[in-house]
Every structure is written in C-alpha cells, then in structure tokens.
Image 1 (cartoon, rainbow, N blue to C red):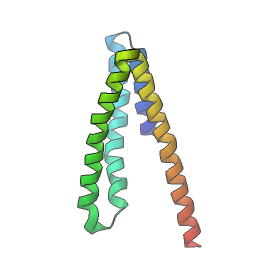
Image 2: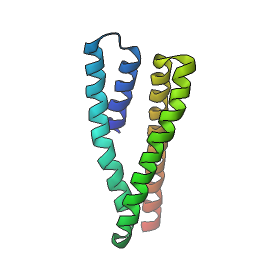
Image 3: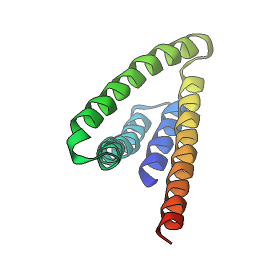
Image 4: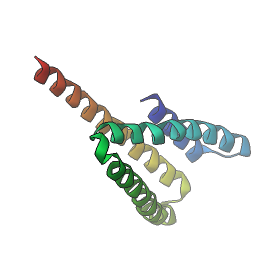
Length: 119
C-alpha cells in the first residue's frame, strides 16, 4: 500500500509541477512506487497459481501490463488533448487511488475467506 501512495503522490506533484526540481521530486516518488509495485504484483500473480502454471501466470501478467500501458496511453492522450496535462495527471492519480481501494478490498476479502475456511 505505501508504494501505491508513493506513486499517487508523485502523480499529484507531477500534475502541479512548474519547475524541473518538482519534476525530479515527482519522478522520485513515482519511481519508488513503480519500482516496488511491478515486482510485488508479479509476485502476487505467481503465488496465486500452482508452480506448474507460473509460466502462464507470468505471461498473462506481462501481457495485461502491456495492454494497460497501451490503452492507458491512448485514452489519457485523448484526455490530455481536451483537458491539458494537469487534469490528465490528476485523473491518473485518481485512477491509482481507485486501484488501491480495489486492491485493499480484494486482499481484505481474501484474508477473511481464508480465515473462515480454516476454522
């Protein structure tokens, strides 16, 4: 969760950036968050399947990762064209925050289900 928050803070700083120094600060927050999130999500994908299906899980993870970058770039490009970069980066920060809420909900419900099934 701290990595998602770091990435979101970086997006917000980027949306309000008016200098090169702020761009570097935004890059530091975003880089820290992204650098933790990508391997963490891949680990979650690997742990969600049996060992013999990890190759398929890795391929699916990276395929969807790339599709997300491609579609996100296209749609956010459309958004930036009509609203500007500041709004686009704020929308991106909102998307990241929304994903954090969804992620937290999924993890919490999974932990509750595991606890119920054990007892």
